[in-house]
Image (cartoon, rainbow over all chains, first blue to last red; front, top):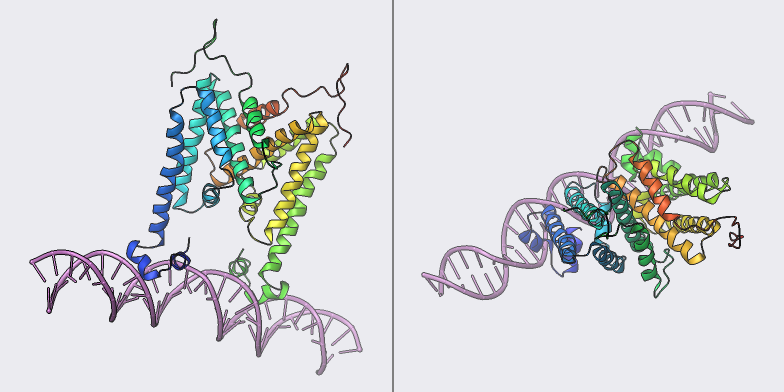
Length: 178
Length: 178
DNA sequence: CCACATCCATACGCTACCGTACGGTCACCG
DNA sequence: CGGTGACCGTACGGTAGCGTATGGATGTGG
C-alpha cells in the first residue's frame, strides 16, 4: 500500500490523497478497520444463526475453503503481523476465531482440553490451506471438481471423530451452557 | 535482506559486499540455496532412515512442532513466494514435502485418495501452526509444559485413525511398494 | 623491492517513496 | 458578483536503498 502507486492507479495524484487522509498510516488504519468488520464479524455473525454446532462447523469449513486462494488479504495481513498497526488487529481477529472454534467443539460436547486441540488443528489447517492455496496455487492436490468437497468432508469427519452424542439417551453429558 | 543494513550490521560497507556478490539477487540466490539444502533435504534424509512409517510421521511432527516459532525463515519465504527468485524454490520444497507426507500415509496402507487427504490435512496444519506460532506468539493455547506434546499426540491419533494394520493377520492389503 | 591480486571504504548517481507548500479550479452562498 | 471552502495538481525536500567508480590497504610471488 504505497500512496503514489495508489494515486496513479486511481488516475489522480498525491495531492488529492493527502486531502482525504492525514498520512499513509491513516489509510492503513481505515483499511484494517474495514477488513476486520467485513471478514471476521460478518462471517461469525452469519454463522452464529445456525443452532447445531456440527452444522455450523461444516458451514464454516465449506464457506472458508471455497474462498481460499481468492482473497489474499488475510494471508497478507498475517504476514504483516509484525507491523505495529497490523499487529493488534490480526491478533484480535485470530484470537476471536480460535475462541469461536473452540466454542463450537465445546458445544458439540467435547471436554475443554479436547475441544481446544481439535479447534487448534482445525484452525491451523485452515490457515495453512489458505496460505498454500494463495501463495502456491496448484501445489495442493486439488485438481478440479469434487476433490475439495471430499477433502472438507474427510477433515470434518476426523475433527468430529468420537463426538459425544448431543442429547444422550442415557447418562451422557449435556453440552456446555456457554 | 537489504544490502546496506546487512553491511552495517557486519561492521563493514557496501563496497565490500559488492566485491563478494555481483548484486543483491546473487545474495538472495545463495541464501535460498543454503536454506533449501539445510532445512528440507536435511530433515527428509534424517527421517528416511526410520523404516516404520507411523514412527516416521511421529518423528516428523515432533521435530517440526518443536521448532515452530523459532525459525522464521520458512514462514517468511512462503510469504515471499511471489518473488521470482523465491517462487521456484519454495514451490519445489513444498511440493516435495507434500509428496513425502503422502508417501508416508500410502506406506502405512491408506488408499491413495485417503493418503492424499490426510497428508494435505497434516501439512496444512503444520504450515498454519508454524505461521501462527511465528507471527502471533501466544495466541495458540499452548501455555507451557506438556500441552504441545498432547496436541501432537492427538493430531497423530486423528491422522492415523482407521489405519489399516500393516501386516494384516488375514486378508488385509499390503503397503504399497513405492 | 615491485607488480599484482585481493579485499575494503568513500563518494556519487539513480529510483521509489513519504510528506509538505502552494497555487489553481469550481461550486455554492450571501 | 465577490468570497469561501472543498478538492486537486505540481513542485519540492528528505530518506532508504541499489549499484558503480575509484582509490586505498594488505599480502604474496618473482
